Length: 215
Length: 215
Image (cartoon, rainbow over all chains, first blue to last red; front, side, top):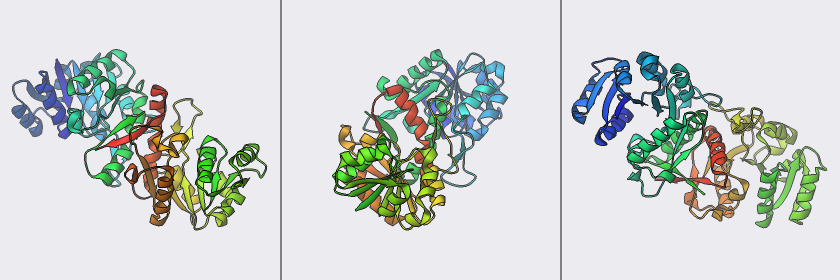
């Protein structure tokens, strides 16, 4: 499958490399065509990896991962262009974190709206699915790094797009019962509002962790 | 120990009954001295249980559990009176849930403030500790209802008050490593903002559950 990954940070690199490893063709998108980090990643990741602008990556991809910083996500999709996103599944991993008042961060959108819904409004003909935003990148693509089982959540209003995302999660190593579907895209509010607790726990535990839902 | 429990709902009853069972003297507080639910609870719970106004309960208790509905919590403490709360630990279990737009609820205070901090400002000489707000009442007082281990969180700015709350949690059956201290009272923002995810998961799973932090 041809996949776009927006964002050149650690999350974008980790997701991009895993997708290449799984046999997908991946174009990493950023503001400029000659972003050094994107070029370095593509060189390292091999023949199936390439880099380009957000618009080039979106046009290339049948599916788009959004791994940009939350504060830049809407602009990334505006630069990508609505026409290049039409009909495509957007896996939104970003979080609306604002560190301007220090750590722990607060959220620049929350409660009765979410970043995922904001993105959906920016590219109304795309199919946004919130996923994987509740843990570090290393765990997203390799859940077995933790010995106990644990959970990941998806929220989205297009069932076909969610099925596609669940298949990708399975290819990352998530078992079916480790993936909890919390409903339509307004569920992204809940997934993003978990982040303040994640940040507090990280500040306390100072190690990699994730939540397991114990019944 | 003499303990006040504010609130006559399921959470107040469950907490009150557990405290009586553990040998404490408990006065359930509500708006009026002759609240029928409080009187019925006190009759059922036995000689160490009694009922009264918020002010009577606060005056009686060396420690206060707040198990009122979030929307009524500030008023309960105003009715209790600052002087009756001075120097006392307040264990705030409430959540700022607003169901006016249906299920799942949104939060009427969140992100850069919390209900626990609002209560602390209402009774500035009390020592508010946020705890137990992330699960159903049955689990609060009997964590072994779930077979796997799971976690509860505390947040508060007074270390002595937190130590007191942790001792009560231990008496409820929580092991020391199941209690995670997330820091000062601003941590209540994180604990309260988890509730939208709790509500979404409850809507999906339709069973009792709690989170385990897997490292």
